[in-house]
Image (cartoon, rainbow, N blue to C red; front, side):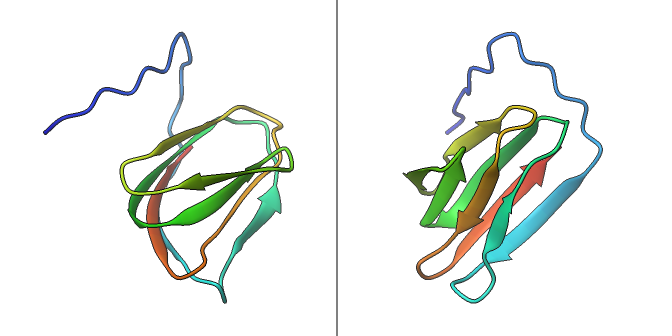
Length: 85
């Protein structure tokens, strides 16, 4: 049941590992920073915004966020996800 995620030549130094729960009442607002991040959706459906473009994501989706890209996540119901960065 393993799934490979191709990250190309990207390297990521992990300074934090956080599990988050996002609901309609608790969106993760758009922001940006100098380090890359990986977001992994554990369950639920969410909408990820990357530089103002929305993408629907679901369980087992991996979102690769490069430095200085505006990004945020909101959920129509509930989504549990991991943030590595």
